[in-house]
Image (cartoon, rainbow, N blue to C red):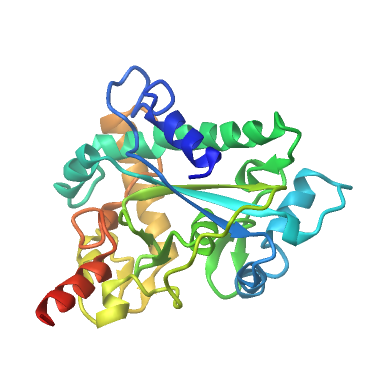
Length: 291
């Protein structure tokens, strides 16, 4: 196990770093999983062209934004991505809801993302202390939201696509990333001027771990979405955003935390991919039947 993996695990185990909310004895997230990708992986160039050539960053683009004037070759860079799974406590509470997020989920969305932000800074600083350049793309002042001609709402750097590139999961009908520990997760990433062994991508298609795309069955996330933003055709980002901004964010402000939080995630709980890669279970069942 690489030392940075151990350090991330140890950092997340400390409740001081990973509390569901200030003063809480509950962790915001369970134990993370971590993956690596080469900075010159062709997938990053494909994502740039596919999502938005004018605005989407490759690792080299993001690194040059952080360190202008620094001469670097993409093969010298690595992307480190991590998955922060929602805890069982939060998942169970959220699975009971049908139209509004539970308070634990809203806390994980707000305070948990602050945990994620601090983790990004911790990892970056870990390398900077060793005189190794590193950056967290989403924390760079140049990072911005954008509109993709092909996909609608987008940004300069996608944490989910970084994790996909690092072998950590594939996408579902709702656009959520289905990982080995499920879809009820948050994602973070950094870019570092150091070479790491890439994590194998145990998939060849970007929807491979989604039951609907793999077997033509499931679609539970469609039923779980109170906004009607998920269908067999995929995820309607506009409907999703409108429901969150106009309904759930106000609910969190008025009934839960006293301020607006873009919280929902009902499609991530009480679904077959909530805490596992569901296609692996099918493979195991088929293997058992073969005996």
